[in-house]
Image (cartoon, rainbow, N blue to C red):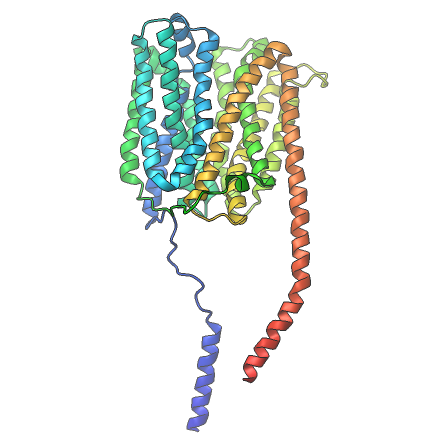
Length: 469
C-alpha cells in the first residue's frame, strides 16, 4: 500500500510539474526607459505635452504680425518667407543626425538641450525689434530662426523616441497625445501671438513664450527618469532600414500629408475671397484642420493600439484625402461652382484623412522596423523618430513653396489637381505594397503548413523514444 501510495503521489507530482510550463522570461522587463510606477509615466506625458505645445506655439505665433514688421524693416516677401521656411530645412537636415546621436547622449539630454535652445532662440527673436532696418535685420532673423530649428529638431526626435521606449504597449495612443499637443500649439500660437503683440508690441510674445519653454527645461530635468539605453556596438544599417516597401510607403504618407497642409495654408485664403467672409470666419476655417487633427489623433491611436492594422488606417486616410481634394476646388472636370459648404466639408474630410495617415505612418514604421529584425532599443527608436521628423519637415517645406507657385501659374482649382495626382500616386504605391505583402504572407504560411506535419512527426518519434528510455 505504501509503495502504491508513493507511486500515485509521484505520478501526481509529475503531472503537476508537467502542467506548469517554465517561465520563458522574467517578469521584469529591461527596457530602455523602465518606469517603475504608473505615476512616472504620467509625469513623462505631462513634461512632453507641455514642451511640445509651447515649441509649436513659438514656431507659429509670429504668423499674424511678423510679415508686416519685416516689411517695415525693409525685408521683401521672398526674404521673410524664407525666414519661415528655413526652420523646416534645419529640421530636415538635423533630425537624422539627432536620431544617430540618441543612443550615445540619451533622449533626456537631447530633449532638454533642444527645449533650452528653442526657448533662448524665441527670446532672441523678440529682440530683433531693436535691430536697425536693412541687411542686419534679415540676417539676424535667419540666424535666430536656424538656431530655433536646431532646438525643434532635437525636441521632436527625442520626444518620439521617449514615447516609443516608455509606452511599447500603447505607442500609438501615446504618440497621438504628443501630436495633439503639437497640433494645439500650432492652432493656439497665432492667437496668443496676435493678442500679446496687440498688448505689448513685438517683444512680448516671443519673450513670454520663450520663458514658458525655459520652464519646460526644469520640468524635463525633474520629471523624466534617467534613460539608460543600449550603446550600439557598430554602425546601424540605415540603408537596410530605408530599403523596404513599408518604410518607403509610410515615409511618403507623412510627406504627402504635410504637402497638403502647407499647400492649403498658402493658397486657401485667396480661394475663399470669392465668398466675402469676415476675418473672424476666415480664422475659424483655418482652425478646422488643426482642430480636427488634434481631436482625432488620439482616436486613431487608440484604434491601432486595439489591434487594427496601421497600413489599412493609412489606406483609408489617403482615400479620404483624395475625396476631399476632388471637391475643395472643385477640380476643373467637376462642372459646378464651389460653395462655402463644399469647401468646409472637403476640409473636414481631408483633415480626418491627414490625422489617420500621420498616426498610422509613425506606428506602422516602428512596428515594421522591429518586425524586420532591428533591435527593440533606443537606436531603432531614434531612426524611426528621425525619419518621421525629416519626412514631416520635407512635406512642410514643399507644400507652401509648390502652393504659391501653382497659385501664381495655374490657379487654385488646377493646383488641387496636382496635389490630387500626388496623393493618388502615393495611394497606388501603398496599395501595391499591401498586395505584395499579402501575397508574401500567404506564401510563407503555405510553406509553413507544408513543413509542419514532418516536424510534428519527428517530434513525436523523439518523444516516444525518450519515453521508452
